[in-house]
Amino acid sequence: MHTLAQKIFVSKENTNQHFDFIDWVYFLGIILVVFGHSHPLGDSWEYWYSTVNGWIYSFHMPLFFFISGFLLVYTKSIDRLGYKKWILGKIIKFGIPYVVLTVIAYVPKYMLGDTSDTVSMGPGYFLNTTFLNPRLGVWGHFWFIYALIILEAVWGVWRRLTKVNPKAGRIYLGGLDLLSLQS
Picture 1 (tube, helix red, strand yellow):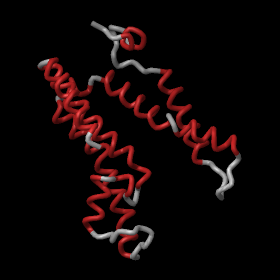
Picture 2 (tube, helix red, strand yellow):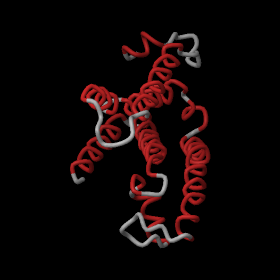
Picture 3 (cartoon, helix red, strand yellow):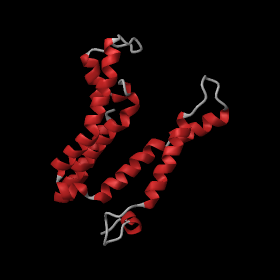
């Protein structure tokens, strides 16, 4: 049984096709991010700019996560590689650059005694803000890389479970829903 998205976007013969509309949505997202980050200096923003910027920030990152999820589902790389190889590839592709860039930014801040943070920048701080609370880390604006790895890993487990037993997949999602209520 095909979902509506499969019927609209994917031909039965070729599931590895290029999606032109994704290129356009991606382009639009980039333009919106540039506009959203190109704000005037100071605190006195025009009302129209604040309104438009708020609107852009309400969906521009979810738009990129949508694109990533859409492509993740239709590449079927998890089926070709298996979960372990697939997730290892994701960690190498995204996790290693994330950690390396974080270390590159952290070391000078630590060595120079950065006082912009209220917490001591010791190794515990580094580990906490790199792996548990990346938005507060030295590369806080790279939080989405960490989130993408986690979401893709969670999706991969769900995908594997539902292939073996659809009921187990629903239980897993229910558990995740309950877990999300805790935060």
